[in-house]
Length: 126
Image (cartoon, rainbow, N blue to C red; front, side):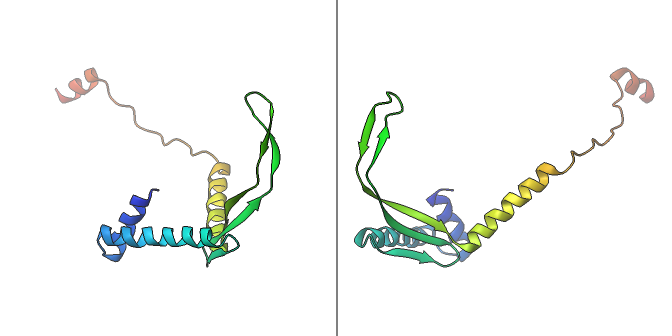
């Protein structure tokens, strides 16, 4: 789903114009970004949705997968997201529903009547 699709869905549900909704959605995203950038120790907790947090990833040794040569990777800040309880529960239900359909026995085909050939259908109509 794209931001444009989110804007369209929200605007239809709330009866706002897409321009008004786009402004609200964009300001929300900007506020999240600005809060995380201004104070890297800050976290944003959205109840039932999740937590955005900035964490420092330590420097490490890595390998170039193409050549196999060692590469030094410097420490850096990364944004992490931990889903909230409601999101976790709903995704878990999706997983359980998928497993249930995967383990259910295959449907038996419904018998169909044979379709008469052209010669048979003209003989019946004559």
